Length: 425
Image (cartoon, rainbow, N blue to C red; front, side, top):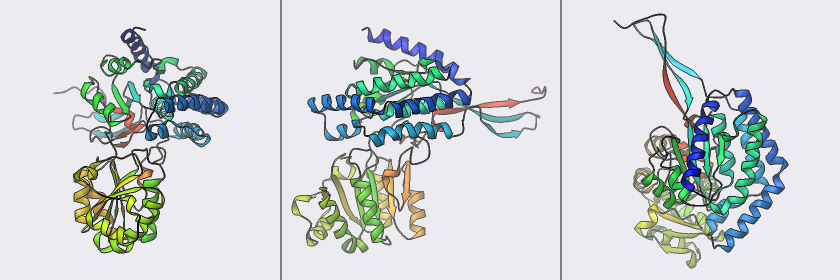
């Protein structure tokens, strides 16, 4: 296969399809989404079979545990894919929405209209659910998309692509509006990120190495986050039961996701009272704690197993482990917690556990991350949980889109002017 010629063909077809999608009506887009959702439910067993084949090949190739976790589909996650599409269909269509109109002294009205971005290229590793989430969000937001999944998920992605095509055809929309790159050749990525004539924005989802490469080499704007060093801060006015429950969920529900807590900060005034229970819970769950000397002293005194305790290095404060490991530090209070987070965080998601309203509001205002939470697990930093239907990715950028990127993040605005024959003097 001539990969460059193949990718240029996909690009030309996507550009043409994007014009049709920009004028597609809401009824047709929703019909496509609901048809795809029904097809996913109908073919759930076939999707799980394809995923099992991908997993077997991935294990044989020696893929790491975090990648295998992201690759794995279950009956529940397949149902969630269909539910996500149905939720997207139920959301208001942002395209064509006009607002912010103001009369000018000249007599004209000036406002804005929401429009699609055009063609969105998505590059991702593992995560077959991204194929469906991205297709659904791009479809509803009037965009065309080119999806380049990893070789480890090729069988499942092909099966999902066929169902997406089925939905597009049923709704009378161009089947080239969603194209899954049908080659595992890595040259396809290099071509996709250097075709500004066909692609308007790139969204990478994968390991730090992949995203750094794309950010470095792309000639197309990139919406991205590099890693997820997420923090939970147990404030000096934290409810102990809430703290224990939230830390458990934020760290141990899943280890391989970007919204998993990787750092735990505990206020000194409550550390002796609250850290032992948290430490014992983490140790029972098999989590290694890399702590400052003060934290380690408290944990040792509470009888936490020595094989689960290790002295933290400077690197640990900024690490994304994607594993049963967490950095633990005792801090003097809210000021030091905020300073530590803003110094070491990847600006993804941070949470405070506190019953003090003023502390909560300061944390929300002063922590410079895409998602900031009060008395809730960092695992909620997700497009589906935020009511976006799904997400095309998480952005830690500050321009255009930040946090989970849903429908609105896949659109832009253009100025519109309404007049009655006015001319400029």
